[in-house]
Amino acid sequence: MTVKQTNLIRSDIRILVPVLIWGLFSKVGFRLFLTNHDLSYLLLLALSFSGILSQVTAKNKQPVILIGWDSVFLILGIKLFFSSSAFNGWLLLLDFILANLLSLTRLINEPHCQWIIYGVISGSGMTFLFNITAHHYFSLISLMSITLLIFANIFFSFSIFIKVGNRLSLVVIMGLILAICATLMLGALKILIIILILGFYLFFEWRVNVNKYDTRSDTSLICLLIFSLVACL
Image (cartoon, rainbow, N blue to C red; front, side, top):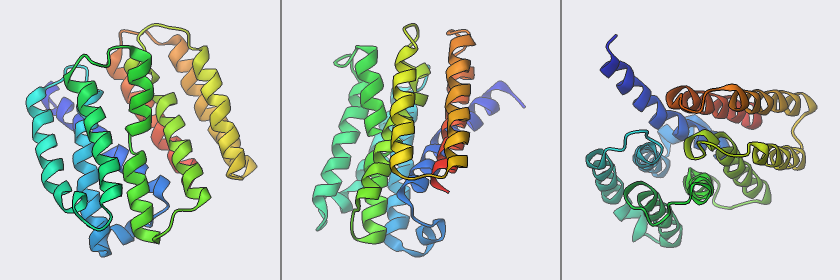
């Protein structure tokens, strides 16, 4: 397998896995995405938004690819932006604007600000739309799940935005994640597994060479996926 093919596969995975994670946190059965036309439409929208986010986190950003994903997102989003649930669509549009600001401009150039903004916009809007479309209401549990997703995004995206710095902030975020897990009344075994996942990532970040971008990025995505599977299934 050539380097180009490897990079292409890695890029595809970095687009598909976040959408899978958002689906898990939305608590919507995957079969429903295939049978419900509105959810199928949102799934396509989520894939395009994930493509945009993949450029935000890419080591070597490619504006042409980003513009392509932007175009797909906006074309698909027209239906949502001018529908009866337009308010939800405009919230997603705000995520879209922030993602482009992170990727194309230097307006937000402080790494910690980039880190927090990315954690907030990475899937929270799509998860909300999945949930509200499938269930037609938004519960406190759903809100807590999205909050957990946001903090998990922040925790596991540390390596993307913070090249050097005090990793003790991860310990604080880890504590918040565990507090939310306890609030959601996850089982003791699940919380134990989550502690192991978070602890492993924390140890990995302390030990790995900060210049190994792909290794850090791939590991963070894998850990986030495993975390999501444990927390949501």
